[in-house]
Length: 283
Length: 282
Image (cartoon, rainbow over all chains, first blue to last red; front, side):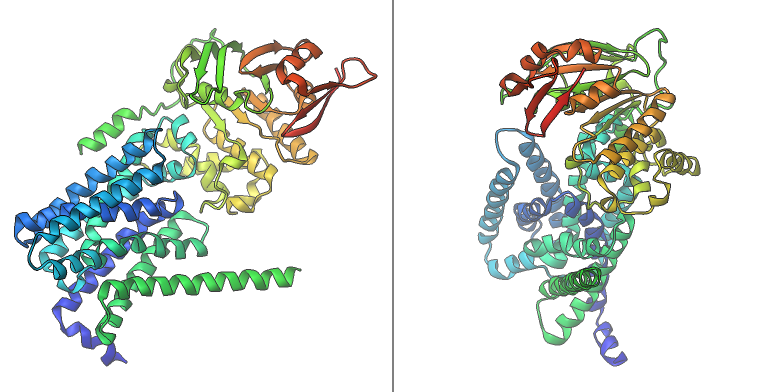
């Protein structure tokens, strides 16, 4: 048993992968709490796809180096998040329609850019589905720094984001800068997506945002507990997913997301069963 | 850090409120108009409210009751006209509390009753800070005042409709609001729960709170409120209930949906979607 647990850890790339998976898990789960409570799952999914052209340009400009890729992705994420936000506020177009248009357009642009490169398929797969085992120490430092910054902002503005999510009208009667806070939250989600780009890739990103947070939502009725539980489920999914990936030779991003989904399924079934039992004993 | 500075600047939290001119009425609404693309509108609303007064805002669905309350709260910008709270614009105040309709709230939100009441204190706590012991003390006092102290740790969705409404009143108290705006607090509540709410509202008045309540029940409006306003996009009448609830004005407000009851002279039945049979006897 201990042998099974330790064997993968003799490889430095597995250790780095697990650190990355836990980091991504915590950051995405905490922000994902707001994504779930405010019903922004589709927005998160779209945003993840919309950063692909930025990743592509970063890739082409940097010739495969990681830093330009990271910063181009971050820039694109922030710009498209604010763009989607602004378009959604204009009354002419419904929000989900606006998101759909920008999402598909940007994603197509990203694929078009990447397809101009020779080794197209391999690289595209990495961007789409992640390459957590290819994480380098510099990647960890960049993502780690950004991740810590995101968590600090969420803690500092905890009560403001809570009011904004629960009762926007109260936020306005209390004279909170609601527009600024809304945009800040969107930018934070965009940055979390960049942090997790290498771990799960753009196509599976939305799972990191919503699945652990929803599992936690089923178990608790308090926001801080929901955040903590979501972070716990996400980190556990990251670590267990990588073990599964190691032993069963499954793509790492998919293994992490499947683990998170399995945890959700268990909790969902458990709570449904408990409700049924409670209902039966009450009736 | 520039962003944080910007945040601080745009959030002028006011501790203890703006300096007030004491002779100003707490609320002065002058010539408020608002036109939506959809055609719904408010037209030239003007009135004043004195301290501790209770005003019932009555009118059919779509009359603009919620819109008017939101303009007074400073949440919506009027197209024309001016709202002043003791001589200042609503934007300079955090002493106005808006209590939303219960249907506007996500009751499965992961928050306890105490958490929700604490949200009212946020303007006084300030950005980047956490609630102090004093804030929790205020929250618990507010909960005690509305009789919910034993339910402080419940998730908000576990409360009854009347308790949910009282929780929001506690939130207004925690906010130390001087002007409370309530949007149809009685809708869907039984008589006992309505009575509980009025008991709490009476104690609010004793604490110097001024109240505007949007509602559908003309009888309760006439019984419980100092003044009533009959609204259907424009102000049809404002004053003591017996002055305002005349058959002519009620027909003007509710259109053909008012039926005169035979017998006792000024008794009316009003057919409204929210309130099938509202009786008024004055």
